[in-house]
Length: 557
Image 1: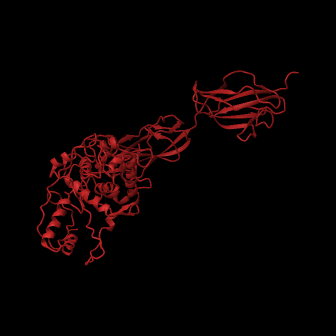
Image 2: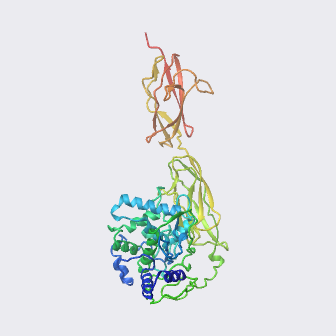
Image 3: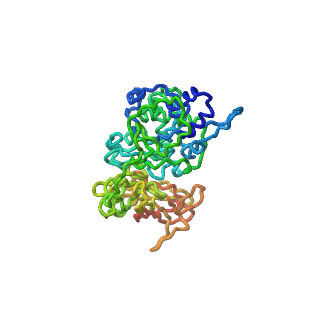
């Protein structure tokens, strides 16, 4: 980039004075078009500028490191120019479709719920670029969730901030310290307060770009900010990460995206180096800002670009050699840890809980492994709390137990998968079954004689109550059938009958269910012209049966 800037400056500036001004402007703003409302010149300035912070009074990212790359200089040819200036940065200006859609959807949502904030989607795009490289170039699924979690370095005080675990590893897989999570790099404690459901799936997932973008929008708009006011915009960005260098970097991308962007397919965006928990050389490993370099009076001609990004405060960016993990430290497999049969009646909690074990390469237990449990298939069964996916970390014995499964109303089989989060190891699959509610007894609620004249309707209705082991059996399926006499009764083709919605004669009713109190009242019953005593059989799911007599007789003379 430095060589590009040098060439442009020589072509566009006519005097050394102009060149010096241009270089000074770039050094001060860290990017084209960035105008800061105020610059405290250090950590103290950051804190004062971020005075109007959200209620948790801590930066959204925990001041975790961020990508320090700046946007390329774009000098489009204009009518009447005497030189042909190159246009650069088309790849950088492309934003993956789902990511761009999430930013614009968040802007629309905030326009409805907090119109006074005037959130521009380009600000979300700038933060998303700096925090995760637009979700790693748009590596998201159809719902906007990253294919693997995006995790920042462990915030253990070793080169970064010290933030002890606040979520028991639920979001970041670390039950000792926190890590920034997702495309917008929220620390778990901030996500717990500001998390949003941006795609309407009933979940608040920091690794979902729609959820994360909407949460970032709410966070930036906190404190009655108007983001069209420069001072409010600066405070909002600084509340995200307390660093003036961070502010300048975000501001430069914000101005860059305001000058124009275009949509690219998901997964085809510019991909930053992987976030590997702190050894990524493209991340800034310093929690306090370094001083702004002084402006140079003259531009250096065509300096060669440094293949490695510079480290604020000077020094080599080459990471220290990391010792190879031993077999006892390396995840080798994830296996079933003795989970029993997974069966529950509709509406009930599963008695058995899913348990997995993480093993190292030597076959021993491995602690602090992030495991994601996901419910798949056509089912409304959910984990406790209404979640279809949860992430937990293994304990000292290498095992972790999923939350209780709560059966829904849909019966049948479904699958629960347990997988090591962000790893390529095979998943452990469990088959679970939801059975229909049952009753082991059913009886009439009264003993009135049921009588009707030929061609008339029965004056009294039939009401029954189902129980299971003496308790009320609600929601139990019941079938009612007019049957013949004999040892092997079948549906009768004469005698009393029901009517369907179209008024047609039917002698079997299905899809009946007992109410919350276990009772069921049948629709009206009609008599045909044949006199005699007939039988109505009611059968429940579970095999309970009751037979009721119906008399059709001519009225007395």
